[in-house]
Picture 1 (tube, rainbow over the protein chains, first blue to last red):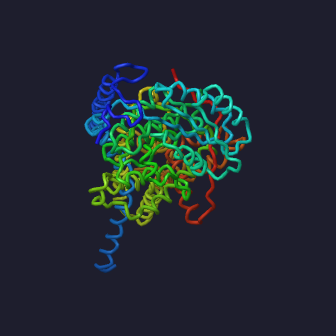
Picture 2 (spheres, one colour; picture 1 turned 90 degrees about the vertical axis):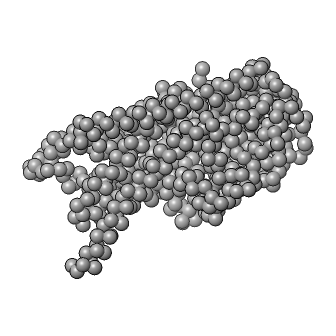
Picture 3 (cartoon, rainbow over the protein chains, first blue to last red; picture 1 turned 30 degrees about the vertical axis):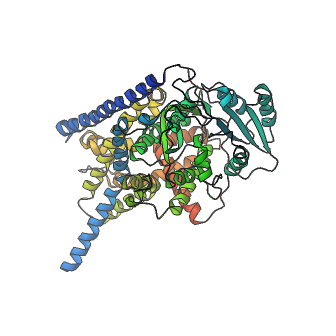
Length: 61
Length: 506
């Protein structure tokens, strides 16, 4: 199913990438960390909404 | 009125209340879309990626692009990608400026890597130009993957190799990148677009990755496998103004996955004038009407997913598509229902309005905060446009409906000034204005565009856009697209003017 970094059918496939030799795993790791960070950011954004709702309920209803 | 008549009247009133609340559907759908982003850290394609460097051809349609094409080619030649595995084909659509000279110079500078394909009779549009190039690159078997881009698009060095990784999985037919607005120094409009692109790409396409259904491969950065192109017949659809969306849908309908790679960044120059933006978005919106019609059997048929590897018929995807597509209809319906209820003396109209705008307020706070956090670099540049995205008047209505007591003294002062009689709530004229505003905002947005190219518009148009909101400009454009399609107005390709202002920020 996957070309998996080994089969190229004439293309260049190996464990290295130009520009950042050996950096493939680090880059994927960084991308995944960024995506996990978005969970925290979503929670922060929801917290802002919650604060507004609480303030509105307590002081302006 | 007899009992039956009373019941019918009451039912009518509640139907109108529902129509008012339905206007919150796009906001609720947008919130759902943003919540889906949370799932992207698990439901992504990174686990199936591998370093992969197939022989890549880049296809650039170009008509009078002398100002930008040279830089774009230079940036492509500097990509972190094996030089012998990368070729650039510029399809010159009978340009009348210096485009042929610039491309010829680059072909000489990068021998065997840059090719100039000339169409002597052009002007038929981007899809025809691309098909001319496709005929050439598919004629031999050198090309394994094809990157379709625009003449002004500037690729960051790692972008292509970041995209090709996904094609190591042969279930994937195409990959698209994150296009960012790159005009520098830019103006208020390009910053609105910059913020919009975070919502429409970095956010919405992550959610679509989670759903397993992508709405559109960005025209400026779509990478296809040869197998995918051949399965599509080796041609780009020329019957619609939304050839990118049709390519995207057909790829997925053919059982091949489409992936958005948010960490492959490319930069493009977007319109800096309302007139230019209107032309571009009207073309896109009319294309969306055509796509909606063409795939009418597909929408909201989740069962079609099974065995076909896509979720285009899913409820969530359909909801996102139609909430955007029908947003002007929701706005007009809501205004009409509010005004009908108000003039018929229905007591709970304020409650319905209140609920609608509290949903709007919560959505606005959540989406704005989250969007700014998704792309902090764009946030630093476009935060003012993020705040004013719904427009100053909508922000005032949000504040008024969420915190009415804060405004009560001010409203009463206005009321006394107007008719000298203090009341117990907002004056009638203000209520009517607020209830009608969702529809009025589109009319004012249209006015901003209409005067945009005149002398008075240079000052007034930006003010009006800040007043009504960038979102209303897009809705007015969508509404115009309905009218144009209903009237079967002539559809022709109008190229967005590029001046070479796009740069990759350092």
